[in-house]
Length: 223
Image (cartoon, rainbow, N blue to C red; front, side, top):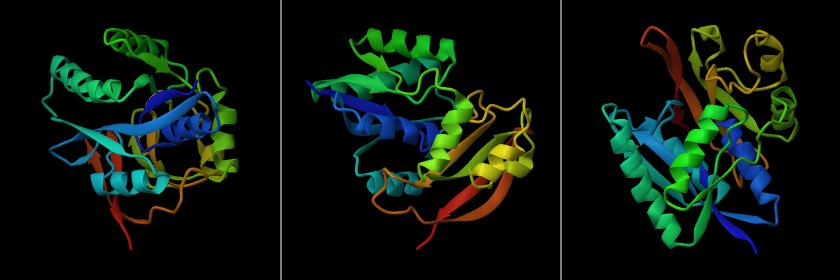
């Protein structure tokens, strides 16, 4: 029996790789993508990508997009309530699993599993414990294309923001930085690859520094 899966979607490379893995499986069928967007900025939370590009991305991978809007002032309790309301829609549609692109952070996995168990959903981690150096290389070799949209200046030089995620970038990363950015060192936006029916076209805008720490490269749709 093929299980229906909702994929937690950030627009970044790990989510794209998780989708790629799930689509290659006969055991699971991804029915939709779930993304949180910060309403004050109308951008993907953490990654800083405009919602219009998120929507173009979802269209390019051929899956429905369920967007949950949160405020910068949203409390943890409010966040949980909104997510439960969103997930209930998918439970009603027969979804039994929520998949994530997490790689090795045990506390993050435990948080997800415990919250989902409260509403009788199972967490799925198709990339769990993969070697992140090999995983980053496999992303590039599979033909995926991504750009770095956010860099945490406490872990990585701001000059990395706006760069393409490729062999050269991987070679330039300091040894202290995880090649997949699993510790939050950087975030990305995937615009092409084997799961896409067409390339998401964009152009780069300004780079901004927020909270004296996070560098964001603005991406705008390009036709």
